[in-house]
Structure formats: C-alpha cells, structure tokens
Length: 547
Image (cartoon, rainbow, N blue to C red):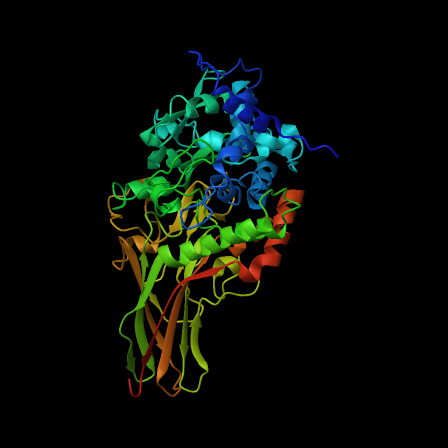
C-alpha cells in the first residue's frame, strides 16, 4: 500500500522550501476557482496548529481541543437537527428560510460558501453528514477556524451583526485576512500561510471583542402564522445583551471566560512560531455537557471525527467549569418553631449572563431535602426523576402548564425552577421557536450588576420574579416554610442547585413529529436521561435539639 501525503501538507512543505528562494513582491494567493478556497475546512489549519505543548508538557493543541468542542460539532448536534426538523414540519412553507437561517450559525462554513453563489443552504439535503465525502466537508465542519478568524470588525456588537450577520471579506478577495491577536512574521510566517491557505495572518484586536461572539449568540427568531406570515419576533438567545447589562461588561469578555488562558508562554503553531504570552485555549467550555456525552455515545452515527478520549476530556472540562465557575449556594439561618421549619436558600450567579442562558431548553432548579434525626425524609422538593423530569414540576407533567416563580415554598410539589417558559400569540405554553412570540416566565438568575428595572424588554425578567425583592442582581433567595410532621429533631437541611441543558419537556415535545431527526433525539435523550443533569452547588445545615 502506498502512503500519500494530503495535498495541503505537500503545499506546506513546498512553502517551507520556497523560503530559501529569492523573495518576490507578490504574496497573493492564486486565482480562486470555487468558494471553498475562500472558506477552508479546519484540516488545513491542523497541520500547523496541533502538536502544541507547554513547558510542562501539557498538550494545548488548538485543533485537537477545538475538534471535541460543541463549536466544532454544531452541525452534528442531533438536538439541533431534530428541533430544526420540527420547525420545518410545523412551518413547511418557510422550510428554505428556516434551514438557511439555522445554517448561518450551526453550519456557517457551508452557509458562507453558499452565500458567495447567491443560494440558500439546504441543510437536510446534506444529512446525514458524511465526513468522507468532499461535498459534505464544509457542512460538517461546524463553527470552524475560517469562520471566526475571518469575521471583520464592521458592526460587531450592534444589531446589524446579530443572527450571524457578521461581515467577511468579499468573495474571491486576495489575499483574505485571517484575524488573530498577534503580529505574524512578515517574511516567513506570512508567506507560508498565504501560499498554503490563501489567508494572510492579520493582527486585530476585535478577535478578542465580546461582540464577535455576540454576532451568533444574539438570536432573534421570527414567529410565523399558518401561512408563513410573520406574526411576531422572539428574543430567543440573548447572552451577549445580558452581558452588556451586567457588571462584567468592561471587566471580562466571553473569550476570557470560555477560552481559558494557557499558563505561561507557548507557541501558537508547531512550525515557524516562537512562544507567545496570553495564548488562549480553544476548548470553548460552555454548558452543554449532555451533548458531549451524546456525541461520544453515538459517535459513528453522528459522523463525529473527534476521538472518544477527546470527547470524554471535553465533557470533564465542561463539568469542572460548570461546578467551579457558575454558581454558589448558601443556606441562611434555619429556625424551628414547633413543627414548622423555616429557612432560606440563596443562589449566587457567578457568570456574566443569566443562569442558565442562551437556548431556552436549559433550566436550573433547587433540590431541597429535610431529614429527621432517624434518617427519614420529612420534606423534599425538586427531585430529579430517572426519566429527566422534575417531581412536582407542572410543565413536565402537562405541556400546557408550568410552575411559577415562588417567593415562599411550603409544599413538596412547589419547586423553584429558574427557567424560560415560551408563549405563543395566544399566551399558550409552547416549545416551538417559530410559534413563540413572548416569555410567559423568565426567572433565570441574573448576573451581578443586572438592574431588572432598567433592563431592555428583550432581556427583561418575566413573571412573579419581576416583583420579588429577593430576586435581584447577582442572586436569588428562595424562602421555605415546611412542616416536619412532628418527627424528632435535629433536622438536616440540604439544598443543591441542579442544572439540565435540555429539559424533559423540550426533549419529549419532539416525540410527536414523525421524522428521523426528532425521533432519533428522543431516543438519545431517553438513554441519557438519568445523567442529563448536573449538581452545580450544595449546602447543608442542621437545626433542632442540640443545635
């Protein structure tokens, strides 16, 4: 069997050899024949941006860590595929627009290529993805290197660039800039980069601007009626606007949190690169540990290229990230008066946006347990069931109802759930993104500095939490007054904050749609339900005799 080097590796070798040749004034890329040359897939970048290690030997390879991230697998995401199919089935007259709009952030490399040819991206024609087929390479590459590093500064942080409407260089532009935080060596690195990829490394401060992330992470969806006519608009995902309205604006950007800094100087490339200070890892640790598990469990079916060990490492990183940097929970003084036990649970949001934020399937809630001296439970609220539902939650039991925000909890079937609940134009509960026009409830915990009285409508608190004086910037305090039923003390009070990326109702509302993608995800969810949630914080205290 003959071994053949990939063409782009041969091009890299040729470029290195060319450094010894006389320099020419022309560093333009050759004439481009197709849009894929403007938007290269990530394998082009891996040649030089892998095999990176710190002075202590830790592997911080950019390509390796990115490939296991949700960013790299955004087009493979089975929940996205299932949810998009649901929307197309509900709004068939808008199918082309729905697929193209979704592709702008989930399949952006393909979408950018299609835009250069004045056509819309037809997502379902490319599913299931086949990474071995050249025509599927751009579609499968997710939020790839050539997307983020080609985004221009124009309009970032303004509505003009929301919904993935960022600007890139004009089609066929020579040579296309690849923006980064560092100045590249103009003789060696620049020439090699241009010759092998067609991109010219260009130092630009906006690559570290939160507005760059905000271009996709500020998403408005158009609500459509039966005929496809627009009947409203939903601020579906608003983490960037939430950040703008918080104390984190001006103190910590998205990149500083979700792309942790490498400790000490390290090279950003394995060829022609010296150590740099301030290099950031491309792990993109976020909140969707569940999807990393699903990608690993169904790797072959979903055409995932990251190896199992890399996916497992990504899941671990997200878990550690969430449990160390998202929330802090404390119990106030507990008081026992006869058989009445009173206490308060405070949850502090440590993030720069609402907790949880972004896609409205995400929720967090308080699981509170009171145990008597003999070990039996006298009160429990917020238990996670094996199927991923929350005991006592109205919405999990009945898709037409939902549990309100509570200022005082006295019964086991009252659960403090921090979540968004969507409503249609008739104020009916829905999980249909293109049916929803409003939030019936939004008591997701606010970040520090977030003034709910001055918050713009698109990120406003909705429901009972708006008038709750203990639901305020940076935290929420929930009050409990429960009966011990005459059981003997002392009593142990334990509280934990549980987080779930995809709530039970958001998964199971796909079950009625008879198509491969929604049915597949419901099956995946049922398999993973018992491990679909994560404890973010825990606190406990004891009250009663001797305490």
